Length: 134
Image 1 (cartoon, rainbow, N blue to C red):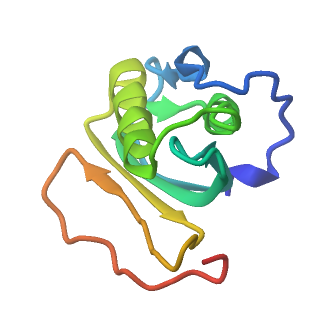
Image 2 (image 1 turned 180 degrees about the vertical axis):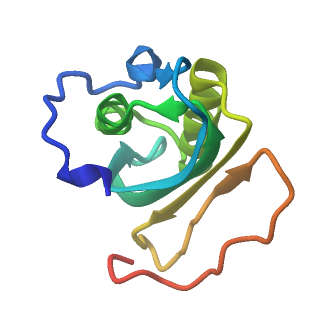
């Protein structure tokens, strides 16, 4: 879980420049999670809290930079689906994984579950079971 890392967060709008990978190291396959994703509804400005799961294979993504990047969405106004697409594309472009999936589980607001999923490769969809935070 990325949330255990001790990082200083000073960016509160999406900052893709925080993302980088270790291209000189052996490729890895890992799943990283965080419960610190927060953006704001584009229409109402209300906070949207989410848990995000990032599964990838390829150059190892710097975890401190990834956590700082996820926290950088704090003051950003965008729909859930757009946030997940932005996260996916920023990681894809800057870290160049071979495979990548981004799955966000947002807390319910207005009685609706919104759990966007974006992947670069065919796979079974994640199981849609509510988390304790939802």
